[in-house]
Amino acid sequence: MSVAPTLIRNLDECLGEVQPAAIAVRRHLHLHPEVSWQEAETRDYLEGVLAEAGLKTQTVAGTGLVVDLGTGTGQRVLYRGDIDALPIHEVAPPGGTKLISKNAGVSHACGHDLHAAVAAGLALALKKMEGEIPGRVRIIFQPAEEILPSGAEAMIKAGVLEGVKYAFALHSDPTRDVGTVGVRVGPFTSTSDAFDLKVIGEPGHSARPHLARDAMIAAAGVIQALYHLVGQRVNPLEPAVLNIGKIRGGDVKNVLAGEVTLEGVVRTLLTDTRERLHSEILRVAELAAAVHGCRVELAFQMGAPPICNPAHLHVHVKGAAVDVLGESCVQEIPQPSTGAEDFGHISAAVPSYMMRLGVRTPGHPTTHLHTPGFDLDERAVGVGMRVMARALMSALVADPDASDGWSGGGQDG
Image (cartoon, rainbow, N blue to C red):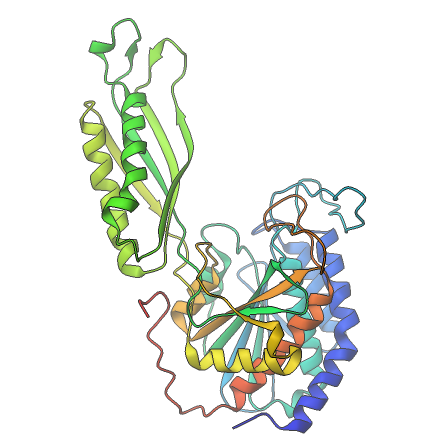
């Protein structure tokens, strides 16, 4: 079943009417960013914008918001917009005129201001035509996407997925021009599991190393062994990444360290690979440390599961994007990303789809995510609204009894 032309016309008209308000939301959030779990002013601002349009909101997980639309009793679809910023000091490019955060040391360097603006625009537009919505739509403004434990986990525990059949989201992509999107079936992002690995020996005077168990040299052996782990113990056709990003140990230069802590991240696309690598990290670290008479303690902080885009939702999103932008502006993503996204928690719970939204101004250099100079072309707000709105409507009118073939996020397919 396809979306009625009259519904599409009314939808486009309402989206056009609210687009200036959505862009104003993006600008306000960009100027006043807040880091994860501290988004109280962001929540209050969004609540005010939505209340002014007659929308009732519910506060969830402390700084999150939920808005329900639609008067029917049919299936419910969800759009996720995240709202937290990063502890990154924003800078302007030479001669640039980009908006600069007013909160020193904090910026929307990942485009969450745009994601939230799209969510707000969808809510405002759908409110104008609420009686025409062929089902129910839930819009969520999610806190704390950037840290562990994440806001997606907290919102799921609060019940935001109850009654939700499908979920959708998008992510800013500064490698694509505004007016284009990236779509993909199957594995889309990886896990990102943090670990703390403590190497424990016995401290001693550097003049008498034979009386100590040097945790520093043992840690060096552990690092070398771990960096060989992916290449030696993981199928080369199964993407995986392991990195050590931080080392802490030692007090003074003439005392052998009794304890060294290694902090790192392991990323995988497949659940089986994830479990196998966790086990192998401990085994290999124990063996490498034992060579130097040391032992290890290992603790993991589990990140989000992989996002896996199912084929039947790909039809809705790609079809919507082609209708809005044209075939040439809808680009297939050839490989999944080894970046992680906590939308993976939602993807593991209900059939879900994430799209990449081009945000680079044509002809301008790329300013990458999570960097002080990240910038985006705010015309992407309107593009994201139009594509996501059509995808939501398309998913609502699809046969609710049709098999979706879902087997959960992070599966091998």
